[in-house]
Length: 400
Image (cartoon, rainbow, N blue to C red; front, side):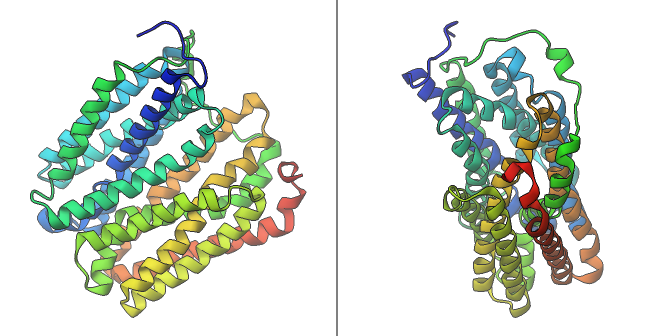
C-alpha cells in the first residue's frame, strides 16, 4: 500500500470509489439474499412466523451494536482495515448460512451479517466521500437500495430456477466477497490515521434541543418507512404466497426488489425538490402505495401488489434520503454525530421490532390480517407526520 493518499479525480481515487460502491452494494445484497428463502426455511426447519421475524430482526440489533461502537473507527485506523474486517465478517456469515440446518444457525448467521453491515455501512460511505465529494452523496443514497434489490432478485431467481436453493446464492456471494478481500490489497488508503480510537468506541447518542421538535415531527413517517421495509424483507414473500397462492420465490423476491428499485428511482426523481416538499409528497405516496398493496392482498391480485409496492417504494426512498437533510442542519458540527446516531437507533429499531410483532400475531390472526393491521399502522403514522410537517415544519430553520 502506498503511503501517499490519492488526490481527487486521480485514477487511484476513481478506482477506490468504484470498489467501495460495488462492495457496499455487496454487503446490502448479502443482507437481503435470505429474504426469498424465508418461506422455504419455514417449511424445511418448521419455523413459526415469529421465529422468521426474530431471525430477520436480530440483524438490526447486531448492526446497531457494531455501528455505535466500531462504526467510526475507520476515521482513526484507516478505511482499509475496517473494510477488511467487514468483508471477513460478511464471508463468515455466508459460511454459516451455507451450513445452516436449523433456525438457530440462521439466527447466528444474521447476527454476524449485522456486524458486517454495521462496520461496512459507515466505512464504505466515508470512503466514497473521501474519493468523490461531488457524486459521493448520491452514490451513498442508492448503494443500500441497489444492493437490497440485487440480493432479493438474485436470491429469488436462483431459489426458483437453480439447484441447491439454500446454498447457491450464498456460495456466489462468498466468492465475490473473497474477490473483494483480494482486490483490497491493490486499493489505496484514503485517509491518514490518528489517535483516539478507544475513545471513539464509546457510543454517543444525543438530540440537540433545537433539533428535537423537528425530529419529533418526522419521526412517525420515518418509523413508517423503515417498518415497511422491515415487513417486506422479512414477511412479504410469504404474504405473496399466502394471499395470492403464487408460491414461486421468484415472484416474492421480485415484489421486494420492486420496492428497492422504486426507492432508488426516488433519489433521482426528487433530487431537485426542497426536502420538506419531498417529505410531504413521500408521505402521501407511501400511504397510496400501502393502500394499493393491501387491496392486492384482499383481491388476491399480484399485479396490485407490484403496483402498490412501486408507489410505496417511491415514498420510502424519498423519506429516507430527505429526513436528514431537514434534521441535521439544526445541529452544530460537533453535535451531528450524536444526532445521526439517534436517528439510526430509531430507524433500525423501527426496521426490526414492528416486523417481529407482526410475526408474533400472524399465527393467531393470520398473515393477511396481520398485514392489514401493519399497513393501517403505517398509514396512521404517515398521516400524523404529514399533518405535523404541513403546519409547523416551515417554521424550522432547516427549511428557511
